[in-house]
Image (cartoon, rainbow, N blue to C red; front, side, top):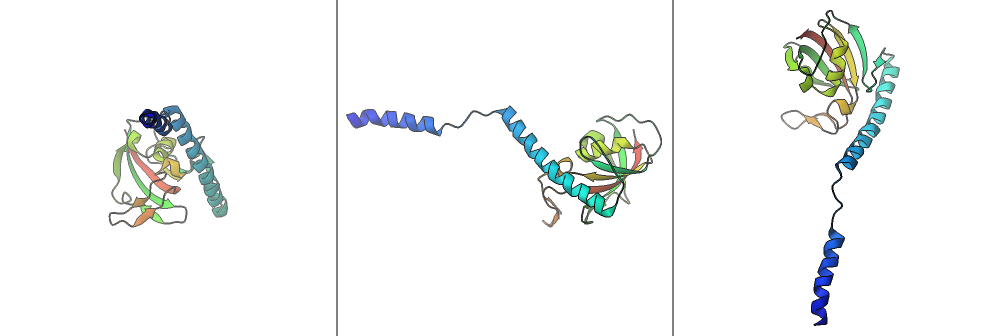
Length: 172
C-alpha cells in the first residue's frame, strides 16, 4: 500500500522536473540580436582588413555596410520597400570567388523590399545610372546559410561576407 502512494508522488516529481522553461520571445530576440552583433563584429574585422590590405576607398553606413560610389547616377528617386529597381550585379566573396553574375548580361527587375538587406541599404545610396561597390557583412546577405548551386556545390559558406558590384539601371 505504501508503494502505491509513492508511485503517484514520484510521477508528479518527475513531471515537474522535466517541465521546460516557458517560451520567452523577448529573450529569444535578445539572443538572436546578440548573435547577430557578435557575427557583425567578426565581419567588420574581416571587411576592414580586406579594404585596408587592398587600399580601397570606402564609406561605412551606420548599419555596418561598406561602400564606394563609382558613379552616383542622376535623378531624385525617393526609395521605399515597393520601389521597383532594375539592376546588373556581380557577387563575389572577399577572396575574389565569383558567386553570381547572372544579371551582368541580362539585367533583372526586383522590388527593393524583397532584396537582401545589403541591397536595401546600398541601392538608395545611388540614383538610376549609378554604380556602387558594396562590401556587405554576412548578416545582411545570407547569414548562417550555406549557398549552393543546383548540384550541391558550395558557392558561399555560412557567414560569408560579400562584395557586390552593382549598377542601377532604373528605379520606379
